[in-house]
Image (cartoon, rainbow over all chains, first blue to last red; front, side, top):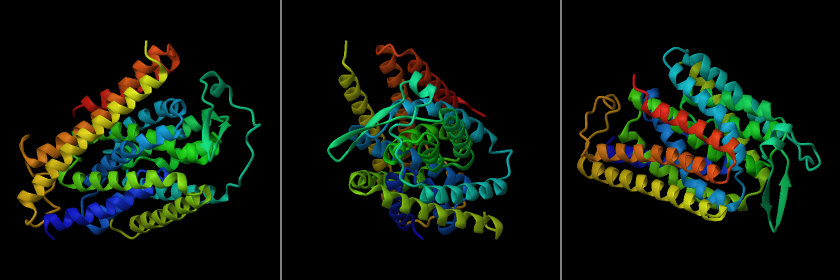
Length: 278
Length: 110
């Protein structure tokens, strides 16, 4: 197809990726890579590069809306990000050494677990649960708006969350994604943050993690302008629309969409790895 | 001495400006690229080997991508300043650590 047709089609898929990214805390990178590799026949390394750009773009595009909405917890995000950036650095540098097959299978399994855990989680009353000592020391607790109220929350299991963030960073560097899935999981399940706080804080974090990975990918030559420009523009558009919808969509709906999407992606990656084209 | 709210506003503004600048570069470069090459056939094999000078459409897109990453670095830099002003030394250190890793990854060359 012509360059124009290619770019336009990629742009449309990227809007979808950005939309889903803003609504679920994923970066859209997990959609971009399969689309580029399977549909557009692009070398996976360049797909990973474009995916990273889309992750940074999603994060930048929707952060403006989030911070002012009052959901994002900057302190938690920054603190946990220290683990993630180290993981990303190590992961990106390890690309040459580790087997992709093993990683993609592992990644698929992580996606399935995330999908399962996300749906299984019941509504619980954490308001009186004791915060973790680290959370108290670093003043990580926060508040978030719910209709006309301001609700507060406490933070638990910080070391576990920290560890999972390190893994999330590692995966981000290795696979060229933002690891929003893992980050949301860590904050939702381990830290016990309200879901919308988890997704928006994840959105803040994935931009930084991806920037670390992208720095290294640039030196590898994996970032291709011809691919990155439709992806970036599409994703920002989709993320902008998605951020506007966030306050209007019920948390339960978000969780369901999230689980279905990552289940499908997990199946897709598993299929590709075991039956050949990855 | 700025208030928290003022610093917050400054940071949001600079972040938005940086992202916008990057967007403009990418859009302009992308538009020019499509105008010049839109009717050529897309060749996904030769993507990496296509050489482009700095002042070409693709070079402009690349500058925009670099600006996008630079905005992230700038954001963390501002947060270091933000927490230093607030005398929250733990978070000044945390932000600084992230900044260091970001800078290291950006300037690392094989």
